[in-house]
Length: 306
Ligand code: FUB
Image (cartoon, rainbow, N blue to C red):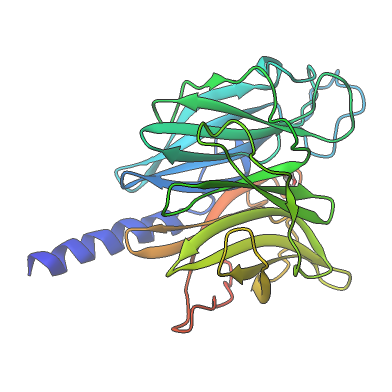
């Protein structure tokens, strides 16, 4: 009886998560990376803003900083405020408004927050930096330099059962993976290009492991369909990966950066849409359940859009 009651409470709490779309309404949030640390659900998104009136040549997405959110009492997303502002990146260009999708991972009792930013040397492609904290909501101590040998966007982190960590990153039609050093601040070998992704691979990757299978989800773009979410699997974190199909069709959200997490015994896909703004440069985080078939493949998610 007690077990049944606990199961009911767990299901009720996880259904509250997805019944609240969009999840946050006081600011625009995109590219949600969801993580469960010690049973608590956190979101590490990026932050869309309306370009300031005096900003010359605003970028396509105007993203000045990062906030972190935690789920409180199963029904309230607490905003822990700005955890990193664009002008606090030790190695970053000032006022670039380009703080794209981040990720955060826990190893031992430390939290490592990875983020892409434009370097101050003015080079065109982003670099990836890291910060360390004793808490999932910071404050983080930001490393002085970006991770050497890594050039790209959309860091996605995987911590394997043997405590080895891997950094996936990419964008621009190519996705790479590199093992991280014990201290999580450097890569230990030249990034490996992931082969086997569909021709329209676009960006983002969210790596996770389930039942000894390594899953990689990512945004891919078909000429006739636009942005969709696809996934591939492997028996090794470094690949090779085999494309398995789509998780979500195009929902006209401009991009489709997302993450997948198991929380209270249910799998949830976090993504973004333009519920509040009506325009796909000012996005809002959402969530919907995701299910695996008995053979480990993923059932396509039909988003609960209004
Ligand atoms: O939201 C900014 C960037 O657009 C993300 O980093 C990419 O994945 C794409 O969603």
